[in-house]
Length: 362
Image (cartoon, rainbow, N blue to C red; front, side):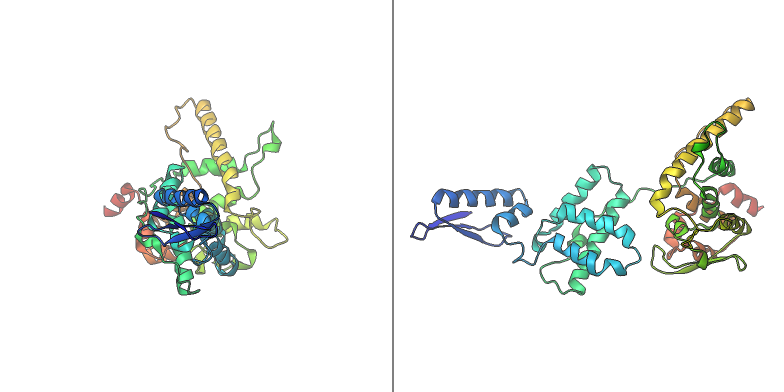
């Protein structure tokens, strides 16, 4: 509760005590100002608006700094050394935007849980929210272990993370793949300006033949590609470990097609990052569906329901992983291609068709 004390010489001291919080005090020349400030502090504490408590009491820096300052230090000192900087940076910025005003001791499980629920209510996927929480946990853990920040604890450990939805089991049929490749090369006679992006067809082929992540494909350099040995060296991967991926004859053919026109900077593809591929791929899927319906109309056949529906670029990696098993590769060989470090994650990416298993059983 608040206590207002007359200290003489026109000074009124307001003191606010609340269980679970530090005691806050401030001196004013007028009693009503002291009472108003104390009322505002109590109301902010009651709302659990810790950023407002910090603003009113001016205790943020004295209590060890803010979450925003911690993020800034991490971005400047740590992020440049990490291979996952591209994916972590937007997550750190989201943390700074939502929780940055909080003093470190005021970052409680309740505040993090509220942020989690707000992200989900705003439409963020459960996987994205989990990634954000993991990034916050990594930030706090680094501050504790590497920087010795005593005013912080890893409160994310006390927060329940949203459960992941069931993994996608979308297989890409050979007909769908053929249509995608056809659409990726198709130039409308009446609209030559709508030509597909250069390299899209080889990208799709390599995605299905190698099971590489989109970011790994886009980041390939010719210096890491050995067409004679049929391998590609991946140096910047999601898990931070380099690996060598074997190339099928179909994958080699796709790379030879790209090598006819090489970039000056030595990169295999024109796209700056994986996000740049999203729009061309969606256009390719739509064009493939138009071509399919035109084929059905010409052949007087009814289109198959669900053809090319809900197809994402990442589904090609799932399809590639399943095909590697169907070709007879063992789990260790498949993992060397996909880069998965655990069998649990490898299983999430594998959807072998039961009919093909039955055929092997005889």
